[in-house]
Length: 142
Image 1 (tube, rainbow, N blue to C red):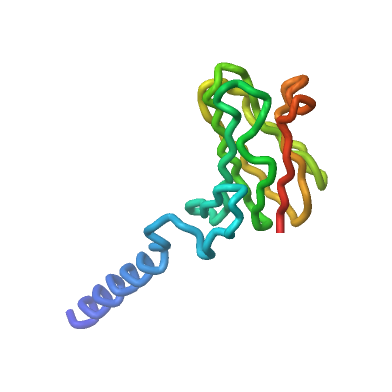
Image 2 (image 1 turned 90 degrees about the vertical axis):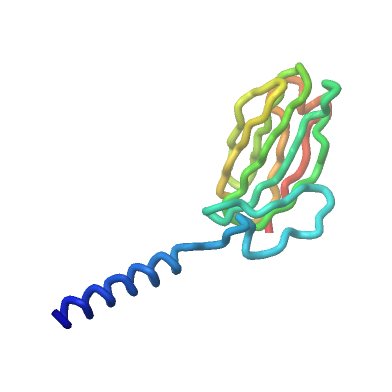
């Protein structure tokens, strides 16, 4: 009987320690504080520890993003793109062997998640004529 009780206590202890180790960060924030860059809203992602950048199209329908520069650390980067205008827009990221585009949206939001190495990338709206009209910027990855 003593061996069974000891085995039960050790099993429960192992489960408690195992669950505590898997607990993680309750606030959903990144391990490091966001950079002091005022050109982009940077928040730590949940779970995977990536970086989330917020980008929006001009709500009046003008061919412009609300930011022309974005910064993020290397690794997983998600661009949360919002378009409150009735004009269709998307966001494409290109450079260093990467070329990915988000869904095209109007009056909504979408996201684009990439794994990026350090370097400079171009972001722009891939709708014909929009990049040429001014919907472009630079994403710097450190």
